[in-house]
Image (cartoon, rainbow, N blue to C red; front, side, top):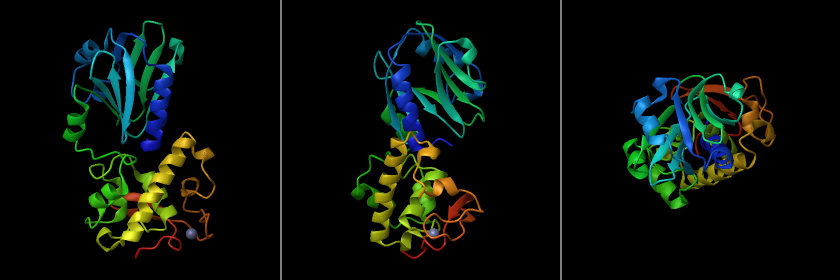
Length: 264
Ligand SMILES: [Zn+2]
């Protein structure tokens, strides 16, 4: 499922391929992917215009059009991805939105499981507020992070994944951050020491930045990361203890109970 590092990779891909070309055709292949507007209205807003720049906020990609502050918004759901191509035959199998440019190339928003969304807004800031999306995880200072998370009810894993507190972290990166920080996902926020919270913040930044640096490709991530061991048979890359698979607020979490402490 695309989380902050994956969407950052999509942003770089889009920036390197589809910007500054005029859109001449808009095909909505699955109406359900549109959050608010009709295919016709989306086409009217995009046709004849260029994609000028893009901005990632949490797991959302906001693509600004060339003629003023208007944004195509992509949410990648569980399986969303982008593909830019020149030959029609290369269209991916689960294309939900297809843009054709006047130079003959295409940009597809492919989403197998249909949990992604395409939207449009004229005010990015108000849009994010309206969706209840908090600040981007990589834009938060330590002070802001502490102010938003310290003493919250519930457990740390759900706080890290709460998009209204900070945006961008999902199930996989929450597990990774907590593993590397040595904090159990069920550690209660109201009992967490400031030192442990600081550890979570520093580790969050390191993990997200390192993941972006390797294009969010699990095969290129360090062998010491949990990400490669999301398997209940696996041994902890730090201590060799078996990685446990547990449920934390309804989601599967992978944890080394020897390395990750609940009282920190
Ligand atoms: Zn361990």
